[in-house]
Image (cartoon, rainbow, N blue to C red; front, side, top):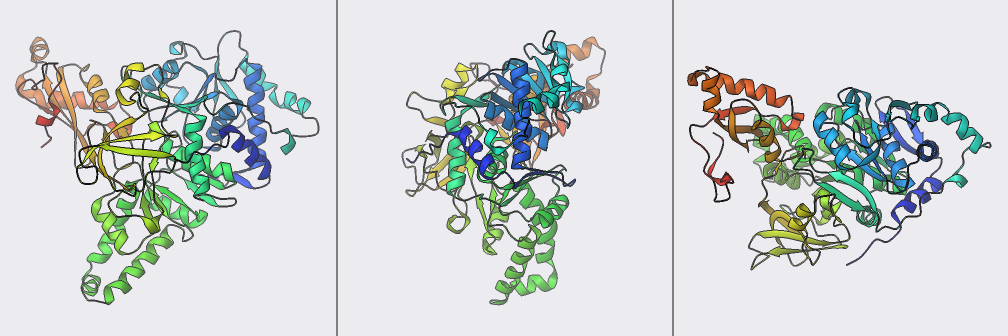
Length: 556
C-alpha cells in the first residue's frame, strides 16, 4: 500500500502562502470572491476569537448552515487551529441538530441564522457561544461569562493592533498537530439512539486529499463548481479540501442544483472537474437526451450502421458543452448510477467514471480515471487501501466488501458498540455492501446488506430513525419504512386500542394515517419524507429477538 504522509494541516499553510493572490472562493451567483490571502486573513481573525474565548486544540466546533464562503471559512479556521470540526447537514431537523451538537460535545457553534431561530439555547449543554455564518461576524448566543459578543465587536481593532503592518503570507502559521489526531466528526445520522459520529483523523482526510493531488483531480489555477453539500464527506474532500490544498478556484453554488441552474452555472464557471451524484446525470438524460433520441428521424438514423456514430458524437458534444466544455471528467458517486444511463454515456464515449466510498473512509475507497473505467464497476481500490470480499470466490460470488488502509476511520464517536460492529481486530472495516473484486482491484457492487436506503441524490436514509419517530405518533403500534421506485412509503400496524379509546371508526383508518403522515413529515428532513402510509391488518412477523422480518415486506 502507498501512504500519503504530508501533514494534513500543513498542506493548507503551504497552499495559502504559495497561492496568496489567486482566487480561492466565489459565491454563485453574486460573484463575491476571496483570494487565498483574503481567506487566510478571515481565518486568522477567527483564530483570534477562538483564543479570546479560551478554545483549545482538540476542542469541538460545530458548523451548520448552507454552503457559503462563511461556512468554508469557519470549517477551515477550525481545522487549521487544531480543533475538531463537526459539520452538520442544514437539512437535519432542529431536534437532530441539537442532539449532534450535544453528542459531539461541541464547545462552539457556527450556524445560519434561519436554523438558529429553530434551536432552543437552553437545550445546548456545553457550547460557549454561537456565531452566525454572516459577514461581518455576529453573536447569536453566549454563555454567561464568555462575553463572545464583546470579543466580536472588538475583533477588527484587536486584529489591527496585532498586525499593524497588515496581515501577510509571512504570518500564516497553523497548528502543529500529528496526523494521528482527530480532525473531524462527521455524523451519518442525527437521531438519539442512532447517532454515528464518524471520527476522521488528519491521516484519514490526508489520504483522500493526497490521492486527489497525486491524481491531479485539481491543480493550481483549476476551476471547481461545488454543488454537493460540503457537510457530506464526498463534496468536502473533493470540492473543497483537495482544491484548496493545490490553489484551485472553488465556486460555491448557492442555489438548488436543478439541471437548469447547474447547466447555466457550468457554462459560466467552466469547471475542470465535475463531482456529481447520479440524479443529476439521470435527470439530464431523461429530460434532454431521451426525448432527442426518441424522435422519428434520429431514431431511424441510429438504426443505420455508420450513421449512429455521427449522431452519438453530436450528442456527446452537446452534453460536454452543457457541462461547460472544459472538464477532464465527471466523477459520479454517492449512489449507484442507473444502468441504462451508464450504458448510454459509455456508448457515446462521454468522459465519466463511477467511484465508491463511504463517510467511514472520508470517503473514497475506489476510483479509476474515465479512460480506464470499466462499465458497471466502481473503479479500482485506491493505492493506500486494500479490499477483500467475504465469499469463497471473490471474483464471481458476491460477498460483503471489507476495506482496510489509511482512509479508514478511527471509529464512531462515543459509540464503542457500533464501532466494534464494523471494525474488526485486524483493522478491516465491514462496509455492509455486497460486491465482487477483480484481480486488478476493480470493485463491482452488487447490492447492500444494510437496511440503509441510498437516494438518487446521494442522501443516506436510515429507516430505523424514521420508524422510531413514526412509532411515537398517535395510533401507530409499529411500522416499517421501505422504498420503491425512488419513493419512501411506510407500512403501519395501527394501535387499534387507541383508535377505540378515541372513538375513531376503523373504516376511517386511511384518513387517520394520512394525518399521521403529514405530522411525521414535519419532523423529517425533506429527503426523508414519506409519500404514503398503508395500514396493515396484522402485526408484523418477527424473529425470536422481536425484530421485524423486513425481507417479508414490500410496498405495493
